[in-house]
Image 1 (cartoon, rainbow, N blue to C red):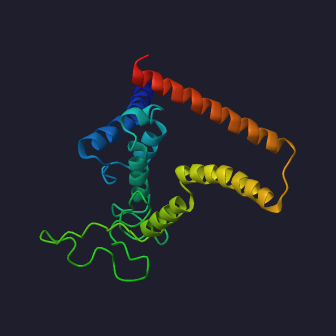
Image 2 (tube, rainbow, N blue to C red):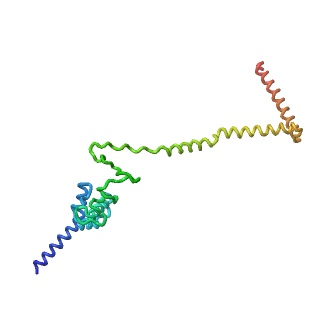
Image 3 (spheres, rainbow, N blue to C red):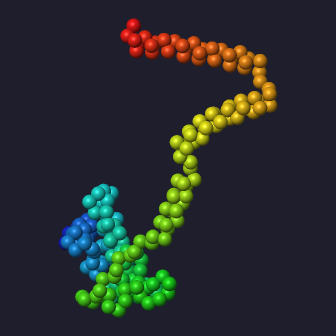
Length: 214
């Protein structure tokens, strides 16, 4: 009876230790190879490791949870020779959900995008994608048209000053041509003429004084 109890306790201890090391073993494999080999661990170990992922895993290994999910999915779908799920096939599943063994196909329904010689050692690298410049031309045209549609500020100032000068002059000459003027216009005209005459006389006397040295 005592031997059976000791054996049971030993078995439970080993199971608890294996459960505690599930995360450590899978994380060690991930740090060593950059990925988790689904055939190296059992499905139960991968599930236990997923439950033991610490909350701060994003700080030092943000891709580990996704890699653990990929390994568990591949293991569940029979990537290691086990029973595959319905319609899963035998190829491992990549993190994006597609089968790793099947080459990606063209979205337009053509041949696989990789081509037959894409995986060879001497395969010619694909040319870099050329940026579509068609969208830049209409944008530049719209910008140029928008800039040209705005009248420059100096032209606006000149136009306003011309209106302030031309409109009063036309109004003045129009009233003179029609023979109509306010009553204060003759007095103002006489006062301005008298002031100009006196200013001219004063300036002439000052010029004579400067010339004769008096």
